[in-house]
Amino acid sequence: MEEQADTPLPADFDPAYLATVDELYHDEWALHKLLRIRWLEDSIRAFWPQGHPARLIHVAGTNGKGSTCRLLEAGLARLGPAGAMTNPHLFDFAERCSLNGVPLSHSTWSRLWRERIRPHSLERAEQRLERGLSFAEAGILLSLQAFAEAGARWGIIETGVGGRYAPSMALKPALCVLTNVGNDHPRTLGHAVWQRALEKAGIARPGVPLLTGARGQALEVIRRVAEQESAPLHVVDEAAVAGLRQRAAALCDTAALPDHAWRNLALALATLEQAEPRLEPDGLLRTLLAVPPLPGRFWQPRPHLVADVAHNPDKLAALAAQLDEVFPGRPLVLVFGVSRERALAPMLAPLAGRTARVVLTGASYAGRDPGALADECRTAYPALPRQVEPDPARALALAEASRRDDELVVLTGSAYSIDQALNPDPCLRRLNAEYGRRGRAGGPANH
Image 1 (cartoon, helix red, strand yellow):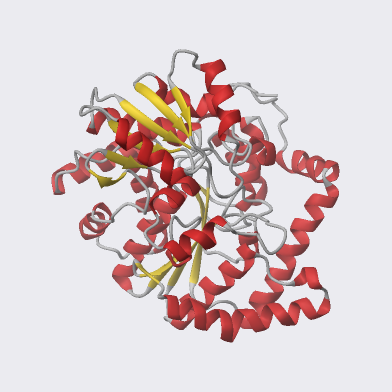
Image 2 (cartoon, rainbow, N blue to C red):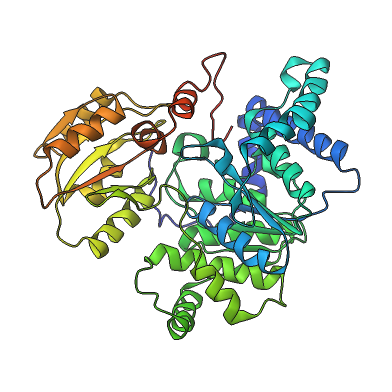
């Protein structure tokens, strides 16, 4: 089923027609998604008949979405209140929405839910039960309520998986951002690069500028979609990234930033220049360079331990490059969990060469069976020593207890494994692990 990234597109490649055929082939699925988008549009109008008071930026892509959202929030906050909604969270649902970089308080979440969103969801459900808000829809409305209450001039919303059929398509953004198109969620988005690009480029709206850092065939697809949608396209290419690095080097020490962080910075800076041309360039760049990473991104809770939410081959390759730069030559002890339908071998590939052994573990949401992962590991990497411990906390303890002095423990593969191994709040850890226990789970992050 896999298709090579460089498979050439036909000369008459027609994104609109291919999207049409895809909808006809999956009509029931597509109609369900489109209907829910329409219902969410109705909900937004019910709260804000004249449109939401904040100007909105819609961010999609495979990697770097959350980091780009935080960079945009920090830059826009230089001119007034700005908010961002990202997903998924690592430890605490409250991580998903922030104002001027500060997560909403638990009391604010509870008040907005009880006073505004829950009554609205019940009203919708009275018409038909399935019309009640989904997890993702409620999160969007909660964030929009928080932005409005705070008087935010700008609000940034990160989509989950895909783009064309995501709940965030109910928004009326001033700008759209597509970070990149990588290799993830092939079962949902398609095995071919052009399929994933077509899905993510579906966020393009007529007349709304679309900014992207995509490359290769994905960029070719995005160009054609933008042209068909009459969406002005702005491409942040490698020359723009190189120019940014030169500018930044003249302002401060930036040696520690990995390559993917520079791409996120360049895309965020180009978006901010479109959104607010009056932002002072050097001050803006200093602000962006000072933005801390999101929770779970190359996090060192202990000197010998790195935890990173990398969960697809592209992100794991970026993690491997950062490990090579920060900890050159140190052998790794991996604690590795996998969620959804992802295959182990391509995920493990970027790290396998310097891994001394791997402890395969579980993931609390849609986690793959660690025993099955061990079988895949045995086939793909027969010389790699492996252990199986389904409980992530015990798996991490096992890796730390057995590590040699020169070895670095790396906990990665799934954010849900990191949550269960390191979440300091036992109540939230329990709720995160039991998502969906009272009914059919639809996916905490994206559905």
